[in-house]
Length: 277
Image (cartoon, rainbow, N blue to C red):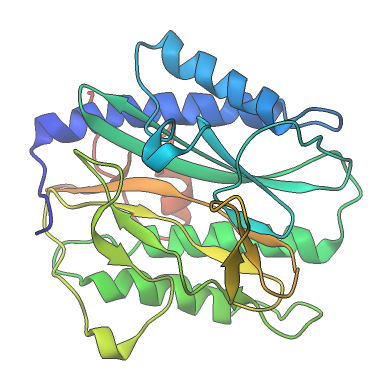
């Protein structure tokens, strides 16, 4: 069953989403050469706890961090610790928070230092752009597969990287979110016709949209720590995520400071009013 939220519940998710946005901003600003992923984790933890919220990552199936810190070829679920960030690295920082039982979840790709190859900038821009293209499809009477199609179509229309293609990660995708962090439905970042068009989108529907793309293969495996997911061919990856609500007035990005107004305006989409007024 897909959980449909009331306006009051979406407002709580907005509270959680703003805390996530603030935690990601603080951790991203601290992602400089010489910093450790554990230090970024501590910064995010301080922000979340400072707002009286709880982390939905810490302790989740035994996970030991407040953030997932995935560096270079690590796609998702990297465990924060004593790894030192180097000039030229890229890192996906994924973070979540709970307010009164309601969840927020978002991720960004951050460039550490400078001197990054153009293909890495294109990789991150393509991943982020595909996320916004998917968010733009969160409309009444659209289907779940319309979000997947928006993501995949955007990626396929971008100039090819040096290896000849972008790998859209197959084993991980977006998810429903609300009274739990991971809920139905599962959202693919590509269209699989065998799965049909999926549910019709209705007001109260909330989804975490999170494309993950590599510079090579879409295939991944999990390291011996039983968490960190890496690309099979060692190519670097990018990961972006926002939690989005569909209201009677349209979509609203719960984990963006401006609710997604600026980015969605570029796509001709008007965001709904802020649930918090």
